[in-house]
Amino acid sequence: MTPGIRQWDVIRVRVRPDDRDEHPAVVVSCDEFCTSENRHAVNVLYGTTRRPDIPPDRYEIVLNGADGLERPTVFNCGHLYTIERRKISATLGRVAPELRRQIGRKIVATYRLPL
Image (cartoon, rainbow, N blue to C red; front, side, top):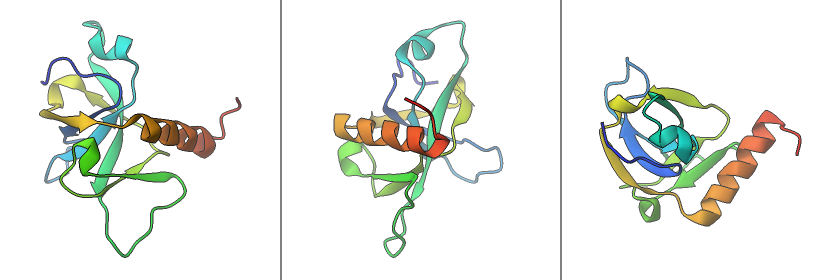
């Protein structure tokens, strides 16, 4: 497990047991949950490599090298995964502040949360 993860970290993890490889994910759980010894899981957005000819859907966001990724990666803001912290193999980077706001807006819009 990678110690010291925080909200908005870009990590590498195998989200689904049947995944052949690990994928990037963005930690969306608050820092208090990330650092609590009593909590063994965090919520993440799962990333997949972006195909250049397919534009992202309205509930997706693309992160890239500025966020610690090797290539453009699409993150679905409409589905949160819960992963065990011990399965995180690496921290790759952090999401930039403006993109954090965009992700938050997409999550609110996708889930139609009232503000």
